[in-house]
Amino acid sequence: MSQRISDEQRHDAESIWDYHQMGHEPRHVDVAIGLGSHDLGVATCAAELYHAGWFPLLVFSGGNSPTTATRFPRGEAVHYREHALSLGVPDSAVLVEPRAGNTGQNVTLSRALLAANGHEPRSVLLISKPYMERRAYATCRKLWPEAEVACASEPLKFADYVRSIGDEKLVIDMLVGDLQRVVEYPKQGFAVEQDVPSDVSAAYERLVAAGFDSRMLRR
Image 1 (tube, rainbow, N blue to C red):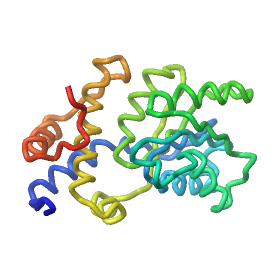
Image 2 (image 1 turned 45 degrees about the horizontal axis):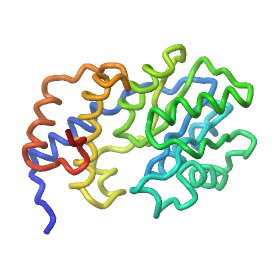
Image 3 (image 1 turned 135 degrees about the vertical axis):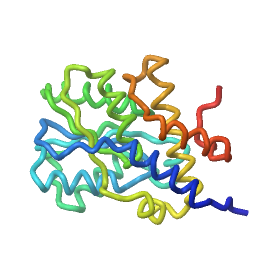
Image 4 (image 1 turned 90 degrees about the horizontal axis):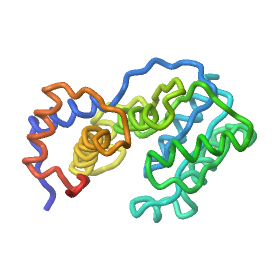
């Protein structure tokens, strides 16, 4: 039986959803990196931003994880590339990094791939699923501090994303899990620290106490 979600819990989830998004305005950058996940909307967003002229070169990064192996059997980055090409992005504008298994590897392996192809970008646009923007930003600032970093994702509201996934409990679990990582990863040297407003922290604590915890790190 699915868990009933109250209006208060939904409001808490929306607070965390809003916090995860960086709110960066579009800007011209040297390269964009599409971060692999279960969400093909990352590739759709990347194609739209490419056609809008915000960057000349696009890297798709990601191998497989237990949550994506069935959906993307050839690997996240490979499927992202295929989708972007179907949306009119030229093959010459796309590089594929097919091995990354986490966000840190998305950054470091994409940077190495770019260097191997003669590119030393000074500005980078990270394109991710909406609730991953802040964690991606914090990770890249730690691992690639020389780069000017901006973030983008599909412009979806929380309710729209829930409809696209089809499982509200799972989406809230993912929001909670990503916020835990935003807090914990700097302590492990994986990311730079991010300020978390008190109302967002309180929303997080209430949702954890209510059992929205399937995507949390286990200590």
